[in-house]
Structure formats: C-alpha cells, structure tokens
Image 1 (cartoon, rainbow, N blue to C red):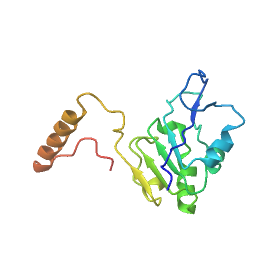
Image 2 (image 1 turned 180 degrees about the vertical axis):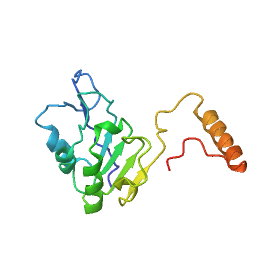
Image 3 (image 1 turned 180 degrees about the horizontal axis):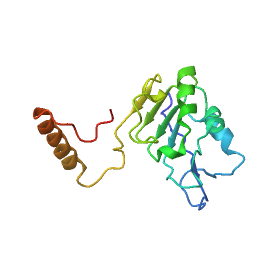
Image 4 (image 1 turned 135 degrees about the vertical axis):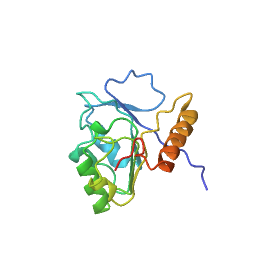
Length: 156
C-alpha cells in the first residue's frame, strides 16, 4: 500500500507565485475543475465586498459530489441556502461551519436541520487566552443557570 500523500490547492485573490502549493486566483478559469476534484474544500475567506457569496449556488454545485465543505472564514462568503440544499440532496457529504451569517443562526434556519451539518460556536480563530476565556464564560453561565437567570450568548 502506498503512503497517503495529500494534494493541496490554494485560492487567493492574487497569488504571489511563491506559495508552497499550486494556487489559483479567484478568476482563474481552471478553478472550477480544481473544485470538482477536491475531497475537502476549506473556506478561510475574509468578509469583504469581493468575497460576499463567493461560494454561491453555482460554485457550490461545482464542488465534487461527496466532498466535505468547511467554513472557518466568514459566513457572508457562503450561500447558506444553497449549502443546506446540497446537504439535503446528499451531494455534499458534510459541512462543518464555525461561522454563519447571521451569528447566531435563527432557530428555524435550514442549516440546523440539514443532514451532516455541524455548527460550532465561532471558535476556530484561537486566542492566546482562549481556554481561560471559555472556562470563565462557562462558569458565568453556570452561575446564571443556578440563579435561573438568562444565559449569556444563547442562540435560542
């Protein structure tokens, strides 16, 4: 058996051409073919006018069937309705979302009920004191719970 060697491809607004992996520009005509071959698509895009709905219905539909989509960039970069529809259809294997638009998602949003959609509480960025902050937040909410007070940062 041959060892697994991952194939990585990047996308940047303007590649510098010194990237350690093959990198496409946003407008590169070869980009759709790369998405059609990807087993995993990881979205790290910032929220800008140029990236708004970058992963629109057409681009998401062009992702390889059975792929897994990750969003740790910004929720505004993804057409979440189209993403939910592809999950329901079974075209995508899963979606792992650390960010959504809006945050938090309303309780009736289709992504909450889409199969194999996993939503985390926007914690992928990491901070030097993240663990401490999360423990402090948990303790504060535990104390509020014990006093029958509303919890902080509750989605619904």
